[in-house]
Image (cartoon, rainbow over all chains, first blue to last red; front, side, top):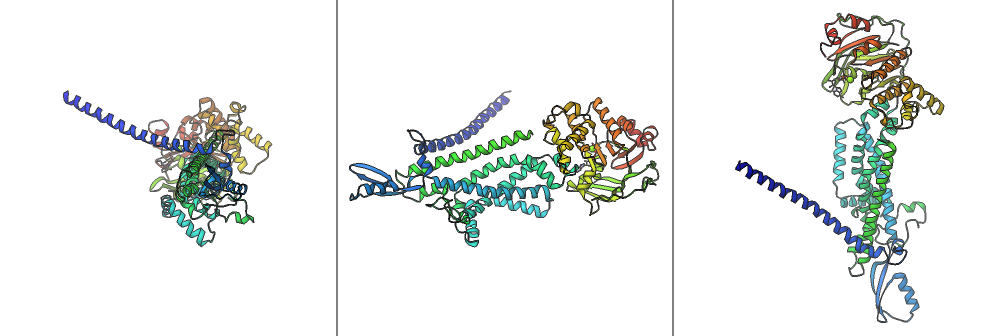
Length: 341
Length: 279
Ligand SMILES: Nc1ncnc2c1ncn2[C@@H]1O[C@H](COP(=O)(O)OP(=O)(O)OP(=O)(O)O)[C@@H](O)[C@H]1O
Ligand SMILES: [Mg+2]
């Protein structure tokens, strides 16, 4: 009796210790996440929001980055952007001031937002096109043999390749060998290849989740294989494929390493649509949010004036990624309810 | 394209190479000839030397204990087993109207349009009732709305489902009861007007009233179609089939006129099965 009681007391204690360990681990994650979001949220909103209407710092969202000039004049500390500084100087001709310049810390991040959007759209279109096609081939057409196993292993390995390696690969193949230079199209292919394994795997899973009975039922009515896939398999797999491509979008938008040698410029004066001829559009480098954050956080001397653009960019970036995710979820729910699974 | 060969009005002997002890049924005209068929899933042989001539414009019932290979044989007739990687016909041949359906030149899509199937596990599409029935027609390239409307109504009436669903044709087929789904699948198969209809336990989820309606339908259909039905219901086989094939452990034990099988079977195993003493 006593031995049993002792044992059960010990079991109970272990039980409680484990419970608390697991619970603390979970709370730890929660605390970290809260801290990150609060930090970026609070510091970022100082840049992104204003206390006067329209309450959003529109210039930050709609202007290109500019150099910030800081100087003392008439006992006052002046912080002017590149353009303002030039205006000020012409208004105060003859006055000679000793101004410190802080790169990228004035103006906004509009070209970076546009660049990231272009990179995401192009690379996702590419990755979804190739990824869904090969997933259809793998799960609907190919018979499981040694060759297909090899293909699958290759895809799995591709998924494990670090993003910087994709960056180097893209640089070697697209930028140098194909001679595309640092360009949108080189970035599309590099980022597209990077998310391809995830998209193939997820698409295959979604395709497999479609009951075999739907294929058989369709084929038995005299539908060809492709008709069956197009009308009776793909529509039901697509919501799942879209859901999983949410992750792909976030990754494509967020990675810096693959684009830093292939597509991203630290600074560019023209917007992407300001090109001489149509084809130039694909062969131009762009600014991008993650790369911009990287540049303003590590490529320029840090001081009290750089925080504004760092946290502002991070805030906008986080917001955009969350917006993309939300859109995909809404889209998926829509198509789900239309299918009434 | 499966070439249509003119078949002589009477084929005899009706069961090719049948072992001596299996009695031969008198068949007017064989639509499907199964000859010495061996079938295996990987290394697991499921059908052993099946010889069977299925008559045209008549109802043939497959009976036999669970797992004896009825579904497998049925799925050989529209080459549905092509979808299973390891599945192979290891020997023998199947001819429909004299044409070997597994020959290299055969268009399997056309074959399946001519040989319709109602599956053992009912599989409505996650589409509206209307679209379920119209699916095969649209695949066949029919776009005229009035034609499709007409065919949908006719097929749903044939499957004894029209009255229950005529007011909600555009709601999902998934919202129907199990038995209604089964009839929806029957309607869907009939809509494309195949020449042969394979039905794998089409009444397994139906109440007696719906069952009676489907059986009535089967009796009507044989005016135009060749029908093969798998059933575990002996009364049903008795009521609506002309010929019955009894399978046991992947072998065809006996094939004859239904009346003969149920009144005076030649094989002891057949008798034991239909009287419920085993299986
Ligand atoms: N896809 C498959 N892969 C491997 N073996 C299978 C497969 N389908 C059926 N079998 C095997 O083939 C044998 C015959 O199965 P089948 O489905 O033809 O039986 P059945 O007569 O239709 O049975 P039931 O009356 O229960 O439907 C069984 O032993 C089964 O395990
Ligand atoms: Mg079966």
